[in-house]
Image 1 (cartoon, rainbow, N blue to C red):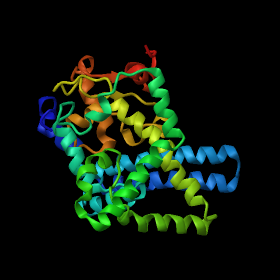
Image 2 (image 1 turned 135 degrees about the vertical axis):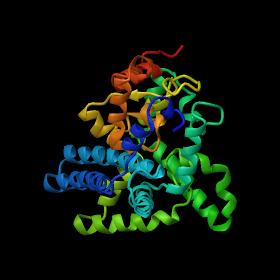
Image 3 (image 1 turned 30 degrees about the vertical axis):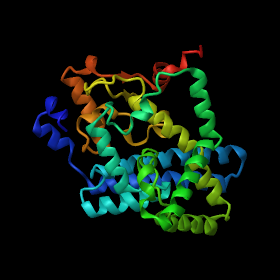
Image 4 (image 1 turned 90 degrees about the vertical axis):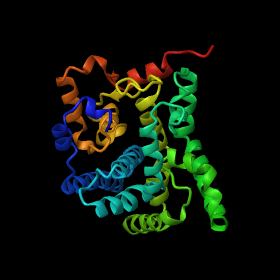
Length: 316
């Protein structure tokens, strides 16, 4: 917000930061509707192709739930505060094994100390630029479930520890929050039981594992990594709000698969963090209108981002 005051008038900020319960509801329906539609497509025409398409679409919408949880963490998903907290926690965070209050505390620290030694997300951006081989290894671990299984195992271990010692979370809280995870799985258990029950009634018991757990442990991990890389990977380690973060242009396909709900407008989000996601394109247009475009770190697409963070570099 402090950075935003240097570029926008109070009236402009007030207008763009207006919340809407109707938009919050529409985005939730859209997100869960795509998930339901992907499963329905497989049910209507079961094949290897529709199965893979369902896994990809659902994994991308699980990232969508993370983005909507992110908006809720900024109290921007709904105008109604109670609705913002309840939906953000139970319909966004819990289904992806996350916790809204813990994530909010962690994430606001990231905003306060962006790209400094106190930034809890620095571990995500510091390894870049890297090499093509390193990027390929990371993608392979994500798509084969190694990343997701490792994180899930850590959550299970911490959940059992917390059953005996409530202080067990302290050392690992930051790591879990960074990955959109909750250290305790107990609160999310009822949501996952509900998802299991609904999918069993609608199709078969294995649908939960195929159409929720599998995407969560594979495709979601990949697109979450791409999102994190695009936002701060290989940017300036400085206090310049136009260069220590990146906005990435995304067409409809990338918006569907990699950048749901305008998450690609990350520079604008850092300028005024409580602007709802649906108004970030307007914030971007206003920055260009004011002549700030040449000073902003903006990638033309995600391929350019991969090039900047090391895709073109070979191992020495």
